[in-house]
Image 1 (cartoon, rainbow, N blue to C red):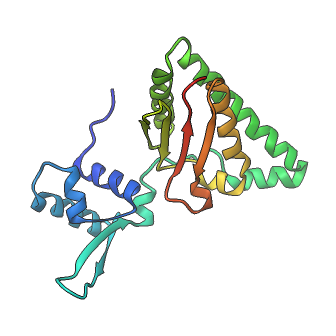
Image 2 (tube, rainbow, N blue to C red):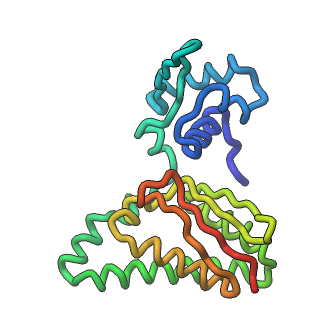
Length: 209
């Protein structure tokens, strides 16, 4: 059973996705009053989970934009403790880069096996949904949307192994290979990646041929 998300949790998730947002745009996600949302914002600012920036205009009053602090970003799942980059660097120094690649390949193969077991005998859409659920349980923050052509565009707003992927690009390559194996009749197309400066990772999995 999933833990119920509080208003503060929802604010943090929105800021993780949107990076920086005004109170006007933030209110589009809520049905509670603006006063209530502002109260939660002020609490999060006081607790140093978010910060605010004043934007001055040539005409009209200045307005505020809100974004996550490092403390706010750290509230999202991160496997850095389980997969420390330092250990892989040590392994590379002792046994070479191939040893590191072998370890990361083994990780990919393990996740592949787990995912394939979950996706057996499911339709294309069901596979996408189940894959997203699987990844979210591991700390990713995925959104997906089906295009008019029947493809799926997937966006990931949180990478729980960002530090690892940022040091070893093969992590992202392995992920793409994993999706190619899971969706053998589809094309997997990468559009953007957080390790290359993008706000989120984005890729398309095409409709099976």
